[in-house]
Image (cartoon, rainbow, N blue to C red; front, side):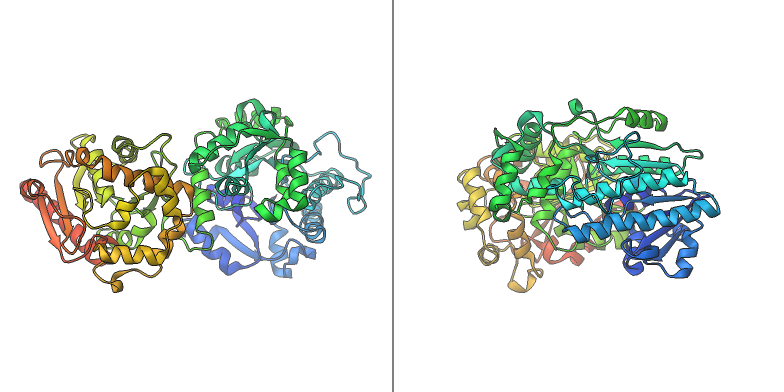
Length: 635
């Protein structure tokens, strides 16, 4: 029954740490600037029954007594463990701001730790610093005054300088007071495994943004340089283990792999470029030259801060203590290769849709190698697959209504290259897209209902053929594409070649898209267009990854469609139903499909799951309930 004070508990690492502490016995004290915002964030992290274990202390790291009122400070004095993970991630921070945030912040934390240790004994202080810190267990100068070390790392970013001076101060203070100190040096932190959701875009996101914009034509440092990475959940798991140690030792832990195990700069940039469907840089350039170019004005032109190049290094780091800790924890290595494509796609999506709100109530998960929006529930899930010019987010209103009506889980899958899913490694085929959906279906329990829309219905149909007989309860195809479009001028224009289509898509305007969709019966009239719908699609197409995925499917639509329509499952393969929007002007149902499948016609356009989510949810729920009644009658 410990009391743990966490400074930075609502940050990128802190939230994962709090989530992993769920179910424990600790009382958690979180120092926060805004208790209201923090409470809202905690509701997404912890079950309702865990709330009583978390107390929010309003304060400010940069202020004396950590900015707390006397009553909150008294609570903090009961702490057995302090985790100091506070501080804004901003590599362009000026000197005074960085000094207040890190050096003054370290002093205020040190004063609290000293008083706790004097009055009751502090079991452990855990300080998160950074893998480039020059300080370790055997080189602390106890006489150094961090407030007078003006020559320390002169010329380096103030963000780094002040973080590392804070490291020195905390080490001095712990040695003087005698409490155990563990300094954890994270490498560049990316999203938790396996989904790679990376809300902090200031680290790897800077490099991803540079590549997607074409502003990184060289390989900084070449194959001798690298950026060490650690996944957020691996990082948090180590800290939670340290929090729960009964008799901790003082030590320094660099949370990174050996240099030989991680990707070098050339490999990293190649992986990023392949994930974004752009040409990878090949020519190496010394980091010092690139930094000089950025300082000379290239940074403002490209959006790459010169300070961000400090994360690129040719150094090796001590990992003996890291390996010892992982062995104690019985944890696997810190490898990130499997999650890296997911991270890159997630960052690309966030950078493309910067400032746009997330669908409320959903969790971002990984199903197979696809990103998914998930609503929890009881029973087998609904699994929804979107079509062209769309993503999982577009089906969020429909998913919410399905969940409300049925209580079942809902999975919204992003097809490869769409939304937050990594692109297929090579040129796409129907089998490739279907295999990716099939791998996601393999993670579902028996009895799932698979729903595909438009070209996503074709992909879902092929994926269903590969499923075991008991795998799906029902396959529902919403507006499947059963022949090339008759009237869709925009789609025909985009069908010439994937490369030409990608360029045209990236220049598409919201007005042009709306006019084309209304002419072709995607929506029956302008009133059916959801607010911001066309703008959201046009914004997404600014991503070279998403534009390339749409261009690829458009090419397949016009040149490979006949073989797709051969694979619409017949009755007996999987119970299949087609729901058809009768106001679609570009597509119709071939007679042979109408004669062999259960088809229900509704008075809407092609995009009816988006324009009429409530009616669609009612139809889907009705089909599912009818199946349940038939099964009950049969038994």
